[in-house]
Image (spheres, rainbow, N blue to C red):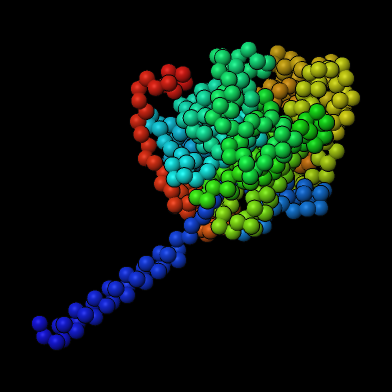
Length: 486
Ligand SMILES: [Zn+2]
């Protein structure tokens, strides 16, 4: 080998070494790690749900939304394996596992395979896991963190998977699927007492706000709280009804959960859901929806405050889908009037309960709750009780019972009148295919800017947490899920 050749080879080797070390440096620089992730999901929270809450907060309450202080944002598509319009189960599966399933399924693919979530991955890596929601703990969005079910409605079966998964913290509503059938309000058909099962596994169990506040985060390792038989009541009702004040806010639950999870030196993953923005929008109850948004935003504020002391924590705020096709403006006017919503003190759901108890006082109860009838509806109320179902009553045929969220003709008509006064429009009583916004702040936040699909989010979270999402597996035939839920 002559001198020239030797020199050339040496130059190539040096160039390679320099290139490799440069790549390594670049990789170190572009691969941030998050010690913990707080994933906040507004169920049904489209961009307009955020905007109308922001307008209400600014004009009526003289404050601004915490979520708007997060500068990195991405536009996120939400379609499921079988529809452009996802349901919450398929959306949650996508958000935690990275796979699309059909509407109604939780972590089960169309080909029958089971998928595993960021919750499973975090647990396997020794991180702590938390699940917090204002819905029943067995409702789709929280359930999909810890369970797998061909049908989301198999909530008794889903509840049984909670002690198996064993999150470090689980706080929500939904006692009805955890108590045995002989207890008042139970929705189980067996004698299982899953609250006792959780206690026997070392969980401290709490059932109201004062018990939650009494928890000592320095000594409590495993916390389990169910604060209502079904969903936690709407924030609007919790604010105005003395009997509901013992239920904690989403912010209170988030704070309590973080104070326990932060003790794990390996880190944590927590999902916090504002679960009832969706329900209020299904019912076209715009004031309840705004108050749910504000309740959710207070939990976002808790997460952002936590981040100040823990800059290695990544906060992600997103939605599983939009609900209702909420429009800011209607008809031919260039206007929106959120002040029309200010006098309203009850959700339509809660008002409906009051009317059911005391139908003779309907007019007074409706006025006291801050709603106003038109003359036409005043006349109708003289003739038809608030509970009358619209079907078969020609005079009420324009006010049908639409679904489980719209409970009576009164419920329907008050939602319509109120929305009209505030100049809010709706296109659907279900979900829509609108993309949603994802906000992120913390290590790796830039990964969440631009265009995303909901399946991108768990992959990015796993990478940033340094954990591995497991591959899907075929479920054994004759598994208990198959026999119970198909
Ligand atoms: Zn949803």
